[in-house]
Image 1 (cartoon, rainbow, N blue to C red):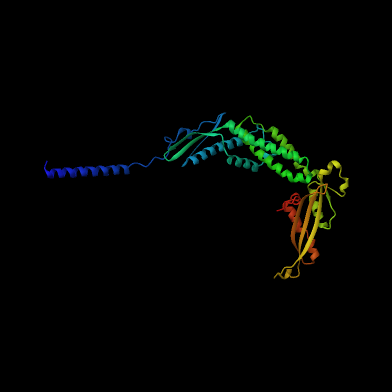
Image 2: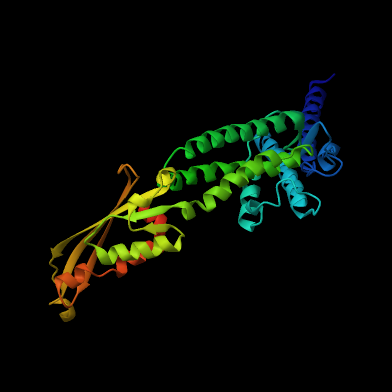
Length: 356
């Protein structure tokens, strides 16, 4: 072959190669973008997850990461439990836990819903997990029986704590009972929030044995102040003492003038209240002409609660700055701020030192 012809053939080969490359690039550039997930690409078990059964609860989820898809799958299970609880609430035939006053308020129902939403799940298995067009799809199955017993153990632990508290409750003075009852109520409330979850997981759960016992505890706590016998030590802070007496009487507590009349079997119900007053002059400069001749008194009222053996059970100091245009003594004897403190915090909280 002539040299010139060889050179022409060589150029043709180069040109053909360039055209092939350009054509390939064009073809790649014209490819359609990846398809968004559709019913054809989304797994059928995500579109129609398996129905819950006696053994498992199912939930599916999708996300940009495996963690996100698993989290959404567990959230779906939590949502189904919430829906089941709602249906139990609305059912007239259910009486397991829901005829208690603890379940009659929308606040309590919201607490139960929040409790379900924040639940930590265990005993679950990732049944399916695939990646489709950049999206992770996860199917989770939750072992119903194992999950039930995990939650039941939580209730049993609380029940054990409540009964320990109640045993101690029986042996302490009434003012200590008033303080301690808050801890008992707190644990009972925690247990009540778990009952609907157990009922939603298993139809065989019946909280009656817990509820009847707790309702008895709560009934005794509710009327605890009615059993209290109050004796006031002699005090120079008469006006302040009279205010305390008024609010103590409103709680149904019985005030006695002589502690010696309290019977031996009622000594644990005796609350001795001691009230002391101290005052200090204060001086303040004011541009307001009204206060140039005013009298300022820093007043402290100390309330001490004792049991029948004169053991101090609680102590509270109420401090206030009183102002009078008449005299220092008039400022000392002003009771409005003291009474407002009682109204704001409640007399029991004041007596038990819980006014902050």
